[in-house]
Image 1 (tube, rainbow, N blue to C red):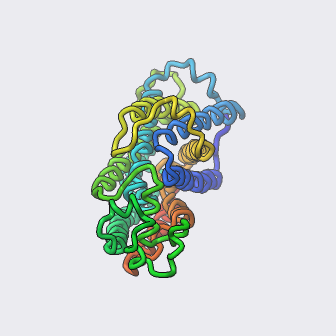
Image 2 (cartoon, helix red, strand yellow):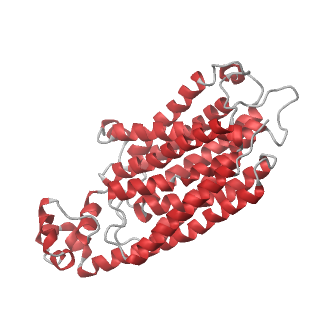
Image 3 (tube, rainbow, N blue to C red):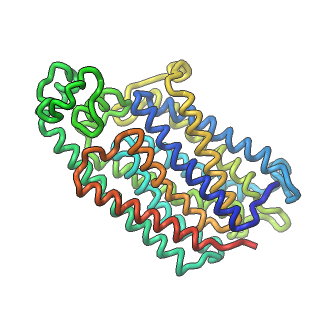
Length: 397
């Protein structure tokens, strides 16, 4: 199997993982905003997510002089470590499943900020002790504190942006009536002004109340009239799940609790990632098939036949699964070399997600000055946090 041995190689893996893990949520959000049911999207995503792990296992897990390789470990008596790997896959799958609903309620940027920050605050602390403290604590924990501050800024950004949107919609007295009959409503002219007179032609400007209502009409998850507390609750639940998957994977590959029998080799990162992805796939398959017939949050019912016939956005969903799968694999490869605590620097993925959120979805367009100040502060704290976390990298023998 191929092993990352240098600190520079580990950091390169982390940076590439950061790009991949920050991009796939934007793709998933794009399909939802175009009206594709999240159950359909997630079923497609989870197929290629598993396929990425299989590709990594049969390539990087088989080449190179290091032993034992991937196939050899499949028949070894290492079920204890396999259970840790599969537990990590389960909590990651639950977190990813939750975030696809949180994106609709809270927005891509804020969801990623809060979940990533919770992941770092809890997960990095656990990994620091599991990694036998190879990372520099005087550098690592100030980085963790920066992420914690970013959580506060992220919550404030969401609250401020929600207030901005509410203000934009105050000119609409009966949202349900306008939502169902937008073209015959004249009150939108009060809100958006003459510059947005192209609304009837589908040219509402990003950030206006007209744009928000048009978006609501198109998207799969309807959020108007629903409490934002629902979105925040889902977001914090996802963050707790994300904070546990990396420590579980750490235990699977390093056996700090000495659960393996004497003489049995520890799981290599590729074998652990394979089992990790299999458990994530199985759970996602079970839950999303159930959600097809018994949907949540007011989504319409679907069926497995309807899913198979839904090709609208399927290519994007497959791409999201590949990006997430290879991103997770790169994160674990870097963590095995430089310490999983330092590898949590990839949780700065909101920097990438926020870029896509602003570029693709017009998030924070025409928001208040207060929202912009909070947004810049949030991003600044993330930049500081990722730099500090990478600076804390150690090197495993």
